[in-house]
Length: 226
Image (cartoon, rainbow, N blue to C red; front, top):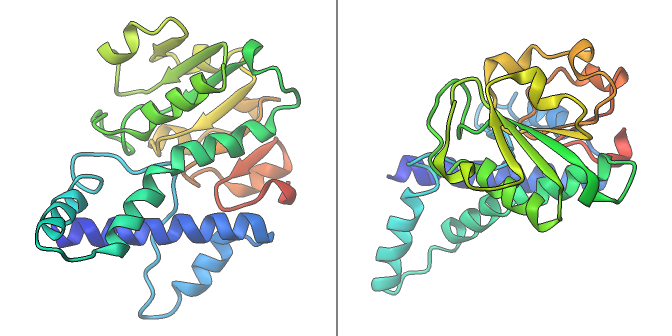
């Protein structure tokens, strides 16, 4: 359980530093590489959200007991809040890539429904929060692609959300692509695939040199760095 809390706290630190770097005009990934070159530094990767049945759950067991015995676990509690807030934060960053403000007429593709790469497990996936946030902004159509998830009852009854296993169909004529899951399949995507569609990489898995060829915003790199 402590291992899960440690990872949650470390990810929250990475997310906080990524947001700081975006605002300060610093490349988080270069700063992280430099920091992790030191023997006692192991900063995790930031991301669009934390999912699964372990990391976002274990801290609550600690916090529940701590509350009963009147112990403040502030770092654990704050870290949960930071990580829970990442989907909404990343959506706000992503829509800055759009050249128009009429979200009611936009189509946004989300790549990945599983909570992490190369699994079909969708428990507590941040993609669900991303969908809700986009709906809150009034986005007309939301297409979700995942190579390992072919159906999801929680999405099937939503009129403006479509789940597909056809990657090309998911992004066709979309106004924005949000990369939510670090599937190996997505890491190989290039300019030929994306074309002129703006891309928000919420996992930091695409080659950042791709930003020289397409409109790409990677978590940890501010919009002013484009």
